[in-house]
Image (cartoon, rainbow, N blue to C red):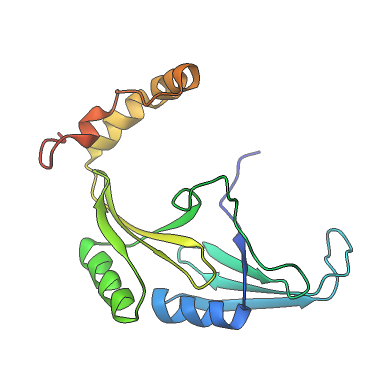
Length: 179
């Protein structure tokens, strides 16, 4: 068996309607499906929910559950807020900068663009507190090959030391010295 693609990724939301409207307005996603049940199909638990699905492009689907009978949403307090996030790709730096402009104009706090050498990103939060990233790839085929060549060595070294391996230290060189 080999995974074909991700069918959908599901997160919890505070308000399904607000969430759909936010993603349609700010990220230009299409609202494609809503499913509502009073019983969870997999567990048979009596737990009403609204499950909404948004088109994130190229067959990628982002979904949310509103769970009105459950305690308020929280997050893993042992994991920094920057760790768990959803990164979505845009086609160009122009699109990335235009998205930042629109988000800021709508009163949304945005960090970046942050230069990750092989891509540049902006970061912000949706109305549910989920951290989102919009990324634009800027890496060259040579850069990607260099990273591909060392990935297993890096993973093994990390596994042994729990310290950042230096195999790809070139990624953190001053701007313009990444060749």
